[in-house]
Image (cartoon, rainbow, N blue to C red; front, side, top):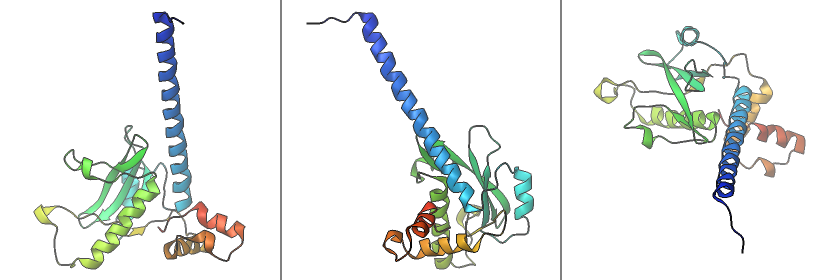
Length: 197
């Protein structure tokens, strides 16, 4: 029979707590690092662009045109700047407990979907926007004078390569890249950016 003094029990609990906190930090660093890698591959991540600079870029763009940039607010990592029918607007992306989601009013926040990466989040809303814009009449205005947010066309920092555009087209056509009769090196390139936006 062994006895533990209160000090040794407290030490064990502190070590467990520290180990758990360390794993959470490692997990967050890994997830944010992967999100950054994915974003840099998109071509529509603009980095440390300011809200005014984003507004200038979007000023003459069509509704639904968007870009992702670093957030200028300390509590957020990223912001989507998009052109709406009322002009350019900014949506903050919240990161909490390993997931990314759009920031919103408290009442709607629990209903918003959460994603493992920023690109997954954008991909979801682009698909939703494409579905919504196909089914909706252009003459209908959103209720209560609100502005409908559409994400349909990214603004690239530079003209994307034909390889990258081909990768997006292939990923849009199939999620079975490993089954395609292609060399492994090409399959790796396709799966390195498995999004369709």
